[in-house]
Image 1 (spheres, rainbow, N blue to C red):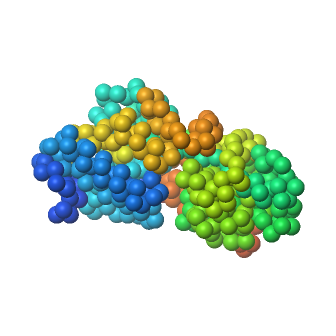
Image 2 (cartoon, helix red, strand yellow):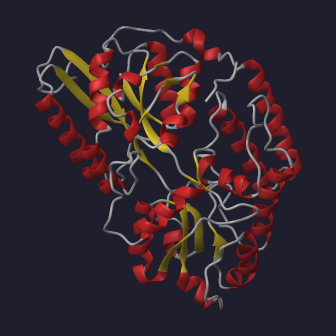
Length: 420
């Protein structure tokens, strides 16, 4: 992938500091090694206790094999992730390795916050899915080592559909729209949507935009394209559903939390962007017999969201060889397989089998063929922020869909012109 010639303003603020990871006196655990590597990990495993136990074991197993490296895996929350990572890199006080998405990886690479880590995969590069490597390869250098791959698809509360007279779950936009009035008559919204700016558009608006045949950016990344007819069609689809009682009443402001949300209370009948852990929450709340998992929703195109999670090497690091060892270990087949089993994710390697034990896994695995990894451009995250606010305004009725997209595009073009 070619990096766009975009000068990111944050680059001037970044300090390439040689501090070798966390300055916490407790960093490095009990390994006693001469090198220290700190990893920032996020709740890929949703269960907090299980996540702590898993990464503590990974840390212990690594140090048992590498007595010259002290590894500290610090678990971080999803909330405020971008701000905290950017601040850490700019100050030179933070992790050596950090878990990123592809769009984040390009953002920090362009700004000078990351270093390439081809050395971490030099012995087994061919074992990785080419697509998982390509999406984080910029200027012919690798900036992320994939450690898992996510997949999302549809899930339905079939009890709600059957109560409204439907025996088959909606598979297309037309099906969803047709079901909305009957479900609304029963006090149930047909489709879940989360309009809070805290929720990534990768799980909300972008899949609908892609299903309409659109993209966020033009092919060369020099401009935005979400204000075209496809973007308007996707937003109008949401607004038409809202008018028909087909979205949750709080759609403009709700977050994507499934546990305790309308999907689990029975107030909403389906979602088009769900992972295995949240499917399991739906089953617990609604009864497994009432939850059906289906293929990705189709508009003009059938598309879902799914990305590799990658470990990226920050400019803070001052011992690349030690960081390569850590990244290679966490991405290894044994750790990769164990992580997938705990997190409900999929391997980013060809030498690791898909996890088993849940019948939804096969459907989620099939959905990978429809998955797009988000919009990988240097200003992706900033553009997402301005678009989120304008989409919320449209859902709240304070702007027409045309004005909301036009205003978002104007702000986004200013961002691109300034380089972020």
